[in-house]
Image (cartoon, rainbow, N blue to C red; front, side, top):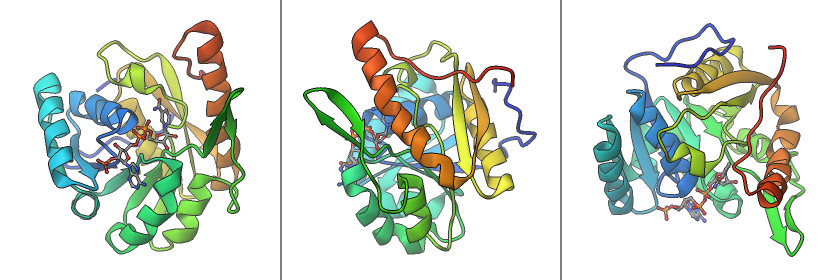
Length: 227
Ligand SMILES: NC(=O)c1ccc[n+]([C@@H]2O[C@H](COP(=O)([O-])OP(=O)(O)OC[C@H]3O[C@@H](n4cnc5c(N)ncnc54)[C@H](OP(=O)(O)O)[C@@H]3O)[C@@H](O)[C@H]2O)c1
């Protein structure tokens, strides 16, 4: 495993990570990278068969431990659960899964964005951010925000990513675990990015990155200096 983040935590060898929405480009890309690093992953989907098909593909690509299941089963079987679904389905999915997510570290990766002729823009969220909405719904879980600014295209590849991942949360043990998880991805460094109340601008920053990508034909990400 590679990386070099500031968090002292390491990913336990028996850690199981669920990726809800793991059949989409972002979830698949994250799962691919974790599996390549030897982290045990279970993809979640609204349809178990769809998750199993993507899991078989990722097993072949990485040789790593990847399974597929429906979202509830994936959540129930794992210690850390990434939420990588569209903003539209976010609240409904979390309400449905709240019992299965109790006691787990839930990593929200969702960017509440709108798109129009001018490109992407940040949506107003009553709770402040998608991550805070997750925390409001999942009162029995430890919610962390991360992986908002990482390109799906770069994730679903083999080259090192050369980017930082901001990890936000109010529980230090959980943010350090997620920093360590980010560190397992080749070229990625997990950096603590502040408390949940500061997740909004990290999620919104993705709209700026999408503008950068369009102008420069790039897959931009972020790097934090002097850390
Ligand atoms: N794409 C990127 O480069 C990127 C970068 C950073 C962050 N993100 C964030 O990552 C999240 C996923 O992005 P994506 O591009 O992978 O999205 P996506 O392809 O639109 O959706 C991912 C998966 O979510 C499931 N899904 C779709 N609608 C749903 C609903 N209403 N309720 C529950 N599950 C639903 C689908 O899986 P099943 O049909 O199998 O259930 C789908 O394959 C978004 O919130 C996005 O803001 C994306």
